[in-house]
Image (cartoon, helix red, strand yellow):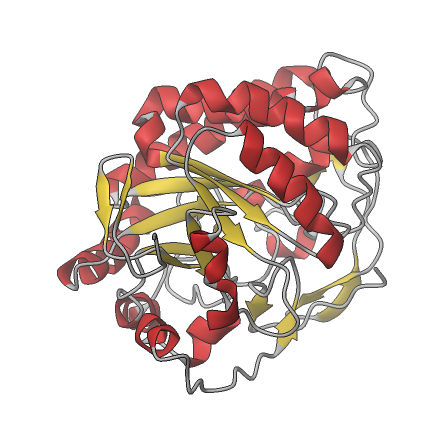
Length: 358
């Protein structure tokens, strides 16, 4: 019988257990050029008991930034700063993947040094507001990417993935969830294009598959994962045809031999599509399950039942750096006291409030 505390081979990387730390935006890149500071080094090193750490979302380019004080991985300065983090995690025997997150239309010109617009598949503004250093601001309409620009954005992900390897990360997770750029291409309400990148299901999954293939070609499938959140309505996403989109996407991704697919459930009705994707995908599945309150030891039987190979935990990892030990003894747990919440499962806590009408 397989349990969460058994080791697992993740595409050649030996994980000590099947417990992952889910990505949680922290907005603590206070160093020069949006680089992680000493507190970030300590934060991840303290949680190296996880079989796998997946970092906060890291923007692959200047335009990819969606929140204040979030880190990048597109400059030499950022590579050097992240190297301190990966060295600290590896010194404690941990494994760590960098989550590459382009926020697309979820952003604001005030975040950018030149006041540029955020970009997206189509010029459709998201409902709600973003917290900035100047206070809450409405999401403005993004600039629709020209057809010729899309390969350049694919290359931004690829360049950042190469930087991640140079910085010592064990791999990268492409953020295709929570209403950010990759999911914006998948969803029909945010992707209203009429070229080869929009319209049909085949065209709307093209950006996700092209980014993934490009990153795999650059750093290897064994170092590449992707995160998906089917039927997630966060950030004003509408996915009325998720039952078609995600199976089609998995059919394209499965032959690539990725390190894993990370599924984030956002409500109790998401389990149906989780099980369908699990049936279709032949590789490792990481699951951030929909739960009432923070995910705890009650989710661990999902591994024994075969629903997932690895379970990711969010908010409890904030308050319990030794979470794998506490899970094994079924608590007690320190209660997380987040400033704000967003995203799917229980893994969306950040240090700035996010205001949304959704």
